[in-house]
Length: 145
Image 1 (cartoon, rainbow, N blue to C red):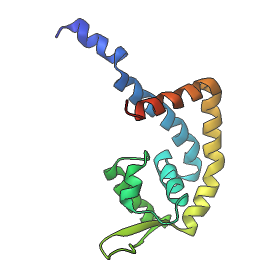
Image 2 (image 1 turned 120 degrees about the vertical axis):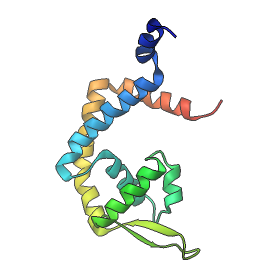
Image 3 (image 1 turned 180 degrees about the vertical axis):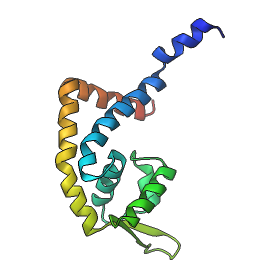
Image 4 (image 1 turned 90 degrees about the vertical axis):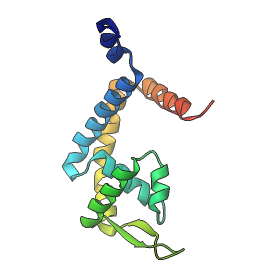
């Protein structure tokens, strides 16, 4: 390995570019959602749980919301804030389901305008065509050939 190779990796690395893109986009949503006291990861989790009746943690871990350890940490914090609640699973006493509370629903409703603001700003900066391209790229990479 030489210095020329190591200097080339950063600008050419798709992993580096993807992480940078994620940070920039997440930052735009975090900035907008800060006015209601949420991060985009919390907003995404609230929205995912609200769109299902009652959700098991294992089911949420399959969604592209966040990794399992981040999911567990966020659920614990969000339960402590009264946005979510855990209830015993229907199958056995060891499992549990996650449900959104009235307080969580109210917070989610208050957060939609901030989310829409970030969504619109990013779409304007990129253009609707580039947003469609980005979604197409993600879809292509998620499907196995």
